Image (cartoon, rainbow, N blue to C red; front, side):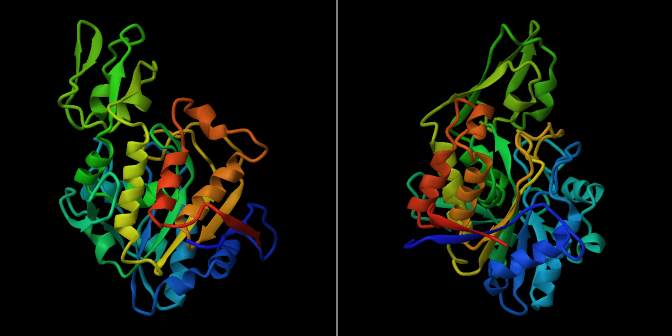
Length: 356
């Protein structure tokens, strides 16, 4: 993509007649997100409703303001996410919708319906062909494919596989079907440090593949059964389960970028992105807890370039030259997802930041 992309930003300071919801509207307008859809377009607003027990996810009243901006321009928005690979409170549409309601996300609070993009049990997907380095086909949640336009509203967090999660991960991993998520995780194989393992069995609940057994007071992982979702690595309170890469450590991130390509390639001019750099927890909102933020609140960003907005987000978090993201996960480089997304033509890492 030639030239610099523009990324727009508001900080979290507020004043009379200029509260955060009002600043969100200003951001929406300045970034040109209203130009990403036409009247009567079905606009998928991809967000994350939070796992039960988490508390750092983007509040529903901010999503309400974004929905209002879309509706005022005659778009037809719906809030959406897809089911999880791991066993939790969002692994099927029934539990997912109950969790969303518990966290304040309902049609009444949002002003728009919620549609779980991959259906009741994660089997509603469309296989999309892509010119990827790692993948040639991707299994994308059906509602995301059938929507006319997409606005991804992402919460910037740390992540044990990608270093950080923001727009690329929210779109790529978030809108992959359960089978697609398994495909993206296939290069990750956790391993147990028996000296640290206490045999508490806490990891069993999070394993979707039934690959973990506790025998003689120690957990063990059947590598032939493991899906590589990596959920046990963060769940383990003893730090006894680490990631062992089955292949190139960059492969999982590159697959996430290729899944983002699969979602966006037929919506090139019909996509917008909003990143919240607030309550930035060390692990993603898929966990049933939210640890203390690893960085102070910075603001909210918007762009029509998915690569630029994530690069700008990283630069803001790491400003001053200190890599806070690498501190969280020293063995993980966060750059491959952005480098590969740029190479795929999804956007540019070169940007101008415009503060409004």
